[in-house]
Length: 354
Image 1 (cartoon, rainbow, N blue to C red):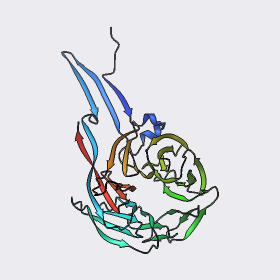
Image 2: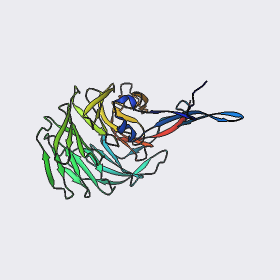
Image 3: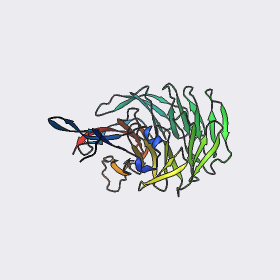
Image 4: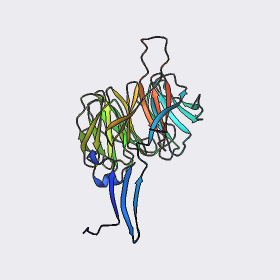
């Protein structure tokens, strides 16, 4: 005699279970991909119906891949940083070693994906970074000339510099605080705010091989993340603020749990990592490694795509341009990548079958 069973039995699996991320974190993750499979038997006096449902469709049927859509041409130096904003999806900013920031209007044409609308000039050396304020109205750039330029006013401005300090600025462009205690012992190469307002922190990395996590409320050091064996170029924070990833000379992308202050795992980039960014709506980490872009699916910690540009050259010794910067569109459908051949290449998520 069989025991009474629930008419519907469900099994759940959440991507990321093996990453050392807590259940609470996973449930609120920026791109949770729940796979809920329900199998049951509904019994009636004269029939038995087998019911099965799966959400989403099996990955073996539909696959996502990146396709090169076009380029943006306008800089006369390496493209060092790219910034996007959800408020203006048809506009991006790019910074360059040509000492300018270009504001682009995206046309999405096949031959030319966008046109330069305006060039912001004023820096006397390479422009190394540019960000857009949360309301999409203002821009801030940092340069090797040692200055920050506010092309308009913005909220909560943060910068890293070769003087080994981290400076916080107010909306009037006045430096309100300089983080020196327990700061980096070498150049600060990258600084990022966490988007999680309930846990306001700053994450920085530098040429001293360290990733540092700071409490924004009092600018005190919370955590030193140690593990890299070479200088660091980049750090990025996940859209929900629970993770960060760092990379640089040693070619390793290290994932850190910002809530628990611990190392999760390491992904091998195989080359110097110049830039990292999380997808805003997929469980992907993208890395600019040498001339290519590697995309890891963090569920299986595997590379699901590697983007390489086609280089046409008459010289057999010509080396492909290096990828130096990455930025996703807010909707997660378009990846902008800057290169040492002065171009921004535009990749788009497309759906294929297999």
